Image 1 (spheres, rainbow, N blue to C red):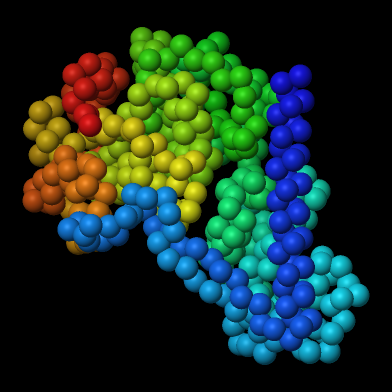
Image 2: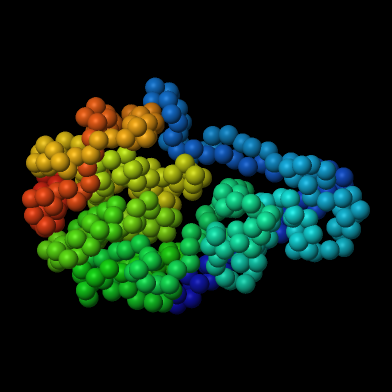
Amino acid sequence: MKEKMEGNFQISETTNLLQKIKEFTRSIVEDLTDGKSPEIFINRFRNYCNDPEADCLCSSDEPKGREILTLKKRSQTYRIGESSHVQSLTSITICNFLRCFLPSDMMLRVLLIVQQLLQENRHGSKRDIYYMHPSAFKAQSVVDRAIADICILFRCSRYNLNVCMRLVLRSTLCCRLVMGWLKFREAGRKFDCLSSLNTAFPVPVLVEEVEDVVSLAEYILVVEKETVFQRLANDMFCKTNRCIVITGRGYPDVSTRRFLRLLMEKLQLPVHCLVDCDPYGFEILATYRFGSMQMAYDIESLRAPEMKWLGAFPSDSEIYGVPQQCLLPLTEEDKKRTEAMLLRCYLKREMPQWRLELETMLKRGVKFEIEALSVHSLSFLSEVYIPSKIRSDVSSP
């Protein structure tokens, strides 16, 4: 009965979204038929500004501005069609309208594809959409922007559009990974990590279809790199530590962040993050905790607001005796990136200790990888470093 109710809820959501798309396109048709230039109002969001002294509202989920897109019959940017075509709009369907008048307007072209995905109950990746009309889109960024605008316009998440970051084979070779004290189902398929605690399972792509989440874990550990994930798996880390380990294999995609958010909401467990002590690692940490600027409109479903930074801290090089030869000099690009991150308002407002660590890294002018801790022993990370950090809660806040 529960599965049937959940299935009906998803169908209802899709039906409602399709109805909104139909009403939206009908209003454009009517305006064009009346000789008007339709205006589309797109709210703009941000999750931070670059003025740490500002009394800003970036922590609010409210829009921070608005952009107006005007569709005109004769416009270099948004050319819909000639007047003779407009006069015939009343006799064609909404779908045919989009097919006829999309050559220049990217958002409407993408909207047609989304409409087809929803009607056919199929999923597609952003890359799939780009390759459907590469000569028109010109660049992947055009599709990305259009999808974001559609989500804002219809007040939904990207997964509601049946658009995924990628569609992959369910294989650990190409997916983000999870292991540990967890089991769940995705679209009827069982993932029983509990039966083999240190075996990597793929992070689900269609997170909205995840259900029956069960865990005996005490905390969730997010690691930046697959190499560190595999180190922990080889050391049987989850056998001696009741935890769930996740890796986004570098910069996390939407599915990884949504899956993490789902686990946090369902299991109410503390979350720790382990990244390299360098600007790139900190950017990954910040993306998990605060979300990305690109998807600030959907920040609530993508961020992990209670995440703690486990390491590696700049001070860890001295505390844990990382040899000088394992420390790498910051490049000029590293320094510029760090200086830019120090300006983000959320660091001063919410995470002043994180900001101090960034300043320390910049002052010392060096960085190091998590794997540098292996200088002591191959299992130092899993047997000493992580357990000591968890026990002492060094990562607070």
